[in-house]
Image (cartoon, rainbow, N blue to C red; front, side, top):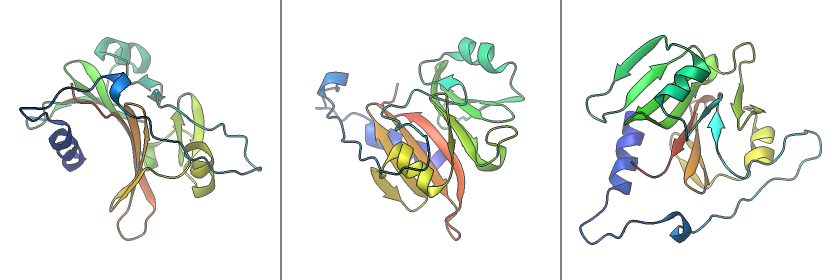
Length: 175
């Protein structure tokens, strides 16, 4: 996960003649949603929260929603502070949520193999993911990336088995 964050940081770091983008100047990527009839999942056209934690939350909001974390760890290289809960890990940068991570084996207490995205339970199965998220915007060695405006979801896969091992919701703009 640290490699992904360092890569994102490198991609998002401004060069000397770079003019910062505004929300209005960033092109919206089209969302290609799969058509299926069997499930009642609604297409997710924007990413706001995962596991009850929003990308708009600050440290106090996270603690109010999730309670006292099991552990708090500060990464000296990235500067992120991670709040570890039973079901999720929340990455904070300057006391603002930058990412939320769910390990599949810890996802959805009592409902392994599901995540709660924007308040909707999403089974981590190929058909349900395609119905809710559409086709990935990017496919990497370690998973699929779905982008909505300034937020993204990455579904991590085991390199050998391709089984889903974790999911991240993150802000695509560095603070």
